[in-house]
Length: 217
Image (cartoon, rainbow, N blue to C red; front, side, top):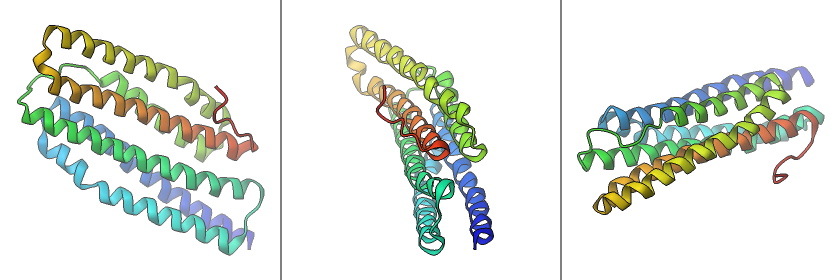
C-alpha cells in the first residue's frame, strides 16, 4: 500500500505546485493593475477568485481522502497535515490578491494616473517568500524555511515605511484620505502575504522534524 500512497503524494504535490503558481500569478497581476492603471487586469484577478477557492476545497478533500484510505504515519502523516494548513494559507493569499485588485479598481475610479507609492520591492519580497516557502516544502529544506521566517521582518519594515508616508501625505493633503487609504490597504495586504508565507515555512519545519515553531517569537 505504501507505493500507492507515494504515487498519490507525488500527484498531489504536482497539483499543489500548480495551485501555488496560480496564486502567485494573481498577486503579481493585482499589483500590476495598480501601476498600469489596468481595470480589466484587476477584474480578472477578482473573477478568478472562485477558481482558487475551488482548488483549495479539492486539495483539502484529496488530503482527507489520503488520511482515510492509507492511514499514513511519520513524515507522510506530517506532510498531509501540513498540506492541509498550507492550503488554507494559500487561499488567504489569493483573497489578499483580490483585496489588492479591488483597491486598484477604486484607485482607477478616483482617476489616479500615477501611483503614489512604489510597491515593487515589497511585492517581489512577499512573492519570493511564498515561492521559497513552497520550495522548502517540496524539497524538504528546513534551512530554506528558516530563511523565509527571517525575511518576514523586512516586509514588516517596508509596511511601516508606507504607513509613515501615508501619515505624512495626509498632513499635506487631508482631502486625499480615500485615495491614500487604498494604498495603505494594498501595503497591508502585501505585509499579510508575507505573514502567510511565514506560516507556510513554520509548517514545513514541523513537517520535517515535528517541531512546532509558531508563537515562539
